[in-house]
Image 1 (cartoon, one colour):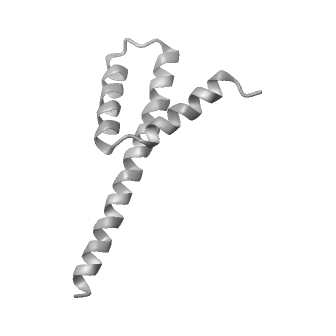
Image 2: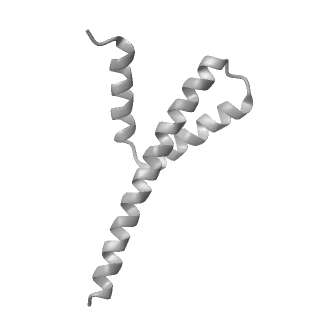
Length: 80
C-alpha cells in the first residue's frame, strides 16, 4: 500500500513539472524569503528547502530547454 505522503510527493512533483519558469521562480523567491526570516520551525524549514530544491531544478530544466531552442534557431540562421 502506498502511503499518503508518497502520494502527495508524486502529486507535488507533477504540479511542479507543470508550472512555468516564472511561476517556479516566484515560488522559489517566496520560499527564500520565508527561510531568510528565520521564523519557520525546523521541520517547516527543511520542507521549504526541499521544495526550493525541486523548484530550482524546474527552473534549471526550463532554462536548458530554452537554451536548446535558441541554439537550434541560431544554427538554422547560420545554415542559411
